[in-house]
Image (cartoon, rainbow, N blue to C red; front, side, top):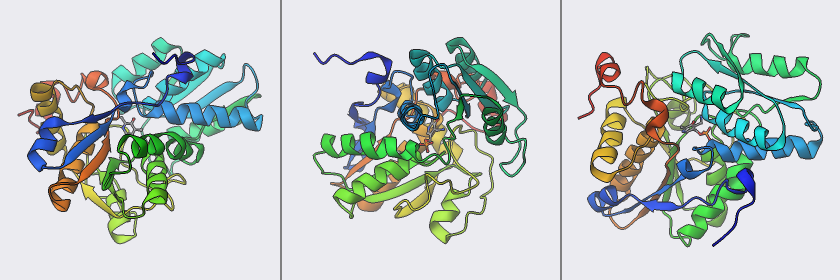
Length: 325
Ligand code: PMP
């Protein structure tokens, strides 16, 4: 048995799981990187650890210093765990359109949570900008700035990418996932393309995001939304995403995502969140485009437990015109 050192030592080295029903249906290997098995429960644990380590290495974060972030939830959860382990207070700014479960988890873990009105990025009261200003106003505090701090994508270049390459023994034809900050897609893409430039990288986007248009037309203009997905889609190209080698993009409607997560739950036993639903839909589409015999890897970003009030709430779905069937 391997022994891991503490909370941080358990981040990464997640299993790569064959999604049996989707693999059988497409004749491809559809493999999911089980990021929900990180100790904080999501793909964002890696970014949280790498960003804190970077601020420690640079000396910006001294013992007892405060870590401030603007986050839709999972980065905050990862950060609070790592902060608790290392003795840093953690302050999280969050837009008010996120699920109440995530606010409660952050508070339970010990973060000071500041829920602020949801306004566009260009507005000075945007949650990310408020987080930056608050960190600046304190002594010995850092704004981890997940969107534009490239320690985020470095986490995936140094850990997720190499793990996927080793786990598939280099037999990988395509990688697809949705994008919030872009850290996962950009970091994994950079590593995989370095090993084999023919690996196809496909960005999976929900509606109400500008990234599908950015990849397919070069212009980051918004597509009509909204989407009930959380933590993915973006109106701008972040520093993490800029320069990433991306070969194509797919837009996944919410109904396809809902059908996917419910099928996974009822037929396969998996309890996934909405971004994972988008990712699996994209993996199936990529498999259909490539044809049988290919290996497609995607990300199982988090579980459904944070989305009981929306994705797994029949009344909520009904109100949005979505059906679990
Ligand atoms: N899925 C979930 C559940 C997330 O919380 C996030 C990040 N907000 C993502 C996917 C997107 O990951 P990234 O920020 O690396 O693009």
